[in-house]
Length: 111
Length: 113
Image (tube, rainbow over all chains, first blue to last red; front, top):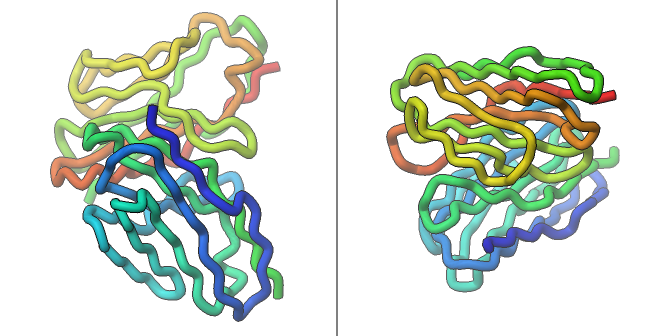
């Protein structure tokens, strides 16, 4: 059974600081996704990582994938309040297009 | 462009009552369709998955069922709701370009009392 673990589960950080969210998964996969969820809202797709070494960047967020280590990271640079949300990673289990989601990381940016 | 809609957005139902949540996708054909549930403060659990009309895969045993009567319509149902059915239900679709990326609807928040 595929397990997807994120850490930390909760993260409170000051504006302007850098931090990284980690996503570990338990089985072989080369497809990993990052989503953002605002309180009470649905999920918004942020990044699609489809190969080992893939790196994607959008604004202050950068995601990378290391399939050998079964690890993805979401790096936040110079955080701003608008980035406060819950971030989920999700893994495609053997390419069957049924995503297994991590537990989420609730990020709070403090002014 | 493709869009996905869910309704109702919010509902409060008594224990033992029936349930019907609907989801439709526009702007694409033969999408894969999904129902996920998110309990309060938790991650997402895949409930049902469909690759075509009448083709439903159940991921978790429960008192819910799903149907796909049309190519772009996905329905989640229950005959008798339980307290544990409360949660945020999300419909999603994935497209023909085979990246596996899911696109989610706005969600339906169900409270069972």
